[in-house]
Length: 562
Image (tube, rainbow, N blue to C red; front, side, top):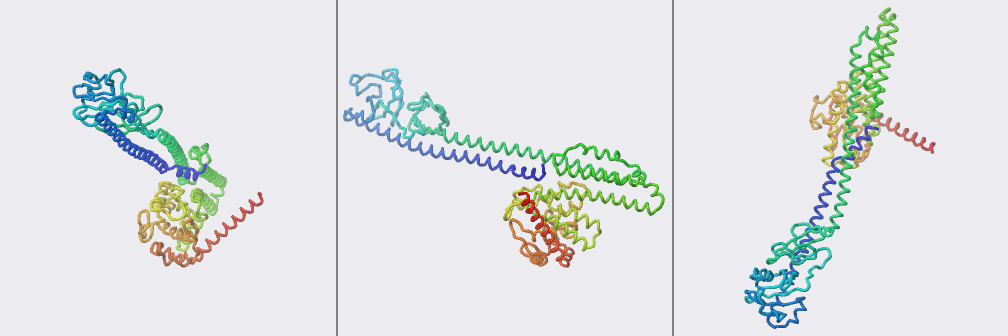
């Protein structure tokens, strides 16, 4: 499995997705709650108004019937029987003449009525039988007007129910088959209701809104969102484990190579004459039988094993030529040259390792093309013209391609985003310089590579990042790569810009524009660029031609395959 694929997967399953999903979940429930509360508040207001009008309507008819003795009006208002009762419990008037002057002062109904000193009331009690009935009434001229209701129906919509409770929360009227009802929520016959209570005289008017369908819908959506969150979380955990595996395997490779170099440094004439593969057993053993999870690390392991074999073969040749070594100083000098070549091969192994890391970085950043190779050639050209020794020149060519290695830890969608970056995205992109330090660690062999990767965005005038260094505080290798990187970036096409010609790029670097100023470059490096800028253009065009030929060859191969 390729490391860049792990990074892409890790970015895709980031914590931001989970946070967004959780916010959506909360918003979903909050919107549902507000919608239900608004509906319930509106319906409750309508219900209390309707109930108030109905009760006033009953009271008006009771007074009217008590004055004109027209009991035919009872049917019009769904009143089955009518009573006028004094404060002593005597029925002064009734729709049943046989009940006139009968005393009911010991009945539960009268005890209920007696509590109502004023206003309109509604009670549920028994009168002359055990069956409880609903009575509407009101106080009038030191008497109580009472009517037995034959039918009550306040609902106008199937999505809600209307209930009337007394001060003890006992139900006087409701379509729910319950004795009492109290609380915000109600579950009845597998339906969910949200209740709203309003005080009316001595009564409590309850409106119960059916929220079954929106509640079930939200639960289903919530289960789906929570499943996505869990999937993201598990995927993130898995990717973290893979990254830990990479760091562990990478550490094994680095430690093995460090041990190999240490062994070579302590070799002398006596030891390398008798050296064999057993002498490197402690180095090869930890990595020989290990099958690394990442293919790139397996390739690096093979490079190290091959280097050890080449060293041993070389030392075998030196051992076989011992007599010739002792014969003449000339032969001894030649053999030391071979030893130097062996050390050079080791340096090449490090550079090959560097090349593998560069390849990983290039594959991860899909828009770079041959950018890192060109930057290496520009940097080598500048170093040569500034008079640095051959080792410095070779090293900067080998390690300049690693200047953006820290981008392995930058989100892929930010790295290859078309158009400009947001402020937060730009700040995250700038962190690739800091991430480079985590990748290289404290290996002295990679000190130049680390300097380039960390400091190549520092500017000579001190306005760069990440630390705002200025002048000679910035390592010279980073100052060289900085100009090479900017030159190639200007020449290259990006999702957010077209490519510039060499003349346009030269003018921007030497004279500046709205973004790039000549003061950001080391003056010595800038002078080399001014003098040899045509060679920069030559390098760029050579690589462009190579890319073009490669595309033609690939198209030709595809055509033949078809």
